[in-house]
Image 1: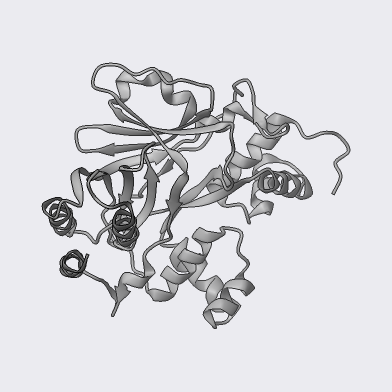
Image 2 (image 1 turned 135 degrees about the vertical axis):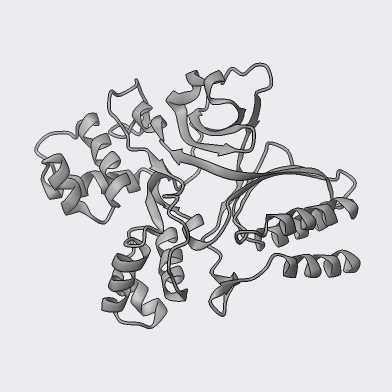
Length: 335
């Protein structure tokens, strides 16, 4: 499709903001809300993806009966690098949904979602790793609340594929959880959710072929359960490819102390005693921090995201973390 005039930055960003609320596949709804031609919205979304961006689902883990947690771990410098990589890959399988290297080979940031009431077992697992001298130390925080508000989008000029001046446009605030308690769901819902996490633009026919069920049943589960039961809180714009002009940083501190960082905010997470900011900034921007504020830079080469841990949902319930602790002790004896 060719537009009669070049896309305006405000219109382009408005489409992205609307897609955060309604999803990138609901182009008709986006067009209606913005009073814009459907083909124009579709064109902007296509350019968005072609420029190396995508939308990521914000999954309400609490609604799934899972407790989001934040981990900072440091491996022992005396541990053989090959063994460290083996333990890291193993940790990825224990309810981990996101993992990032913090600028050196020993320190990592991990987001884990153990079943509700299982955080104590997760701590026991980490203590086993410390006692075995696999880890030097760790910090574990339970997530209390938070939201996505990727204000960095208002600083990025999607019409030119580069950073620009701040745009005066309001982005929706996407909560990490609706805080409505555990929802009713089944394995089919989780499988559909995992496919949508890989690609929110997945067609019903594609998902139905992979699951071996009818498109009508997939559509029913998606509309009535996955989205109807509010297992998804929104859609977050993010990078799908590595770009030299982007820097990802985590800032651990207090909201009132770092208001100046809000212009590059991606996500704010309220944890025990602190607020954790995830910032997306131009590569040449330095974030000032002082006092007890701690700043971590992420190595994008070693950053990984995982879908909802469907493999741990057996017999209509989540596998207990203590099962992994028993396995870990056996792994430690072998290595």
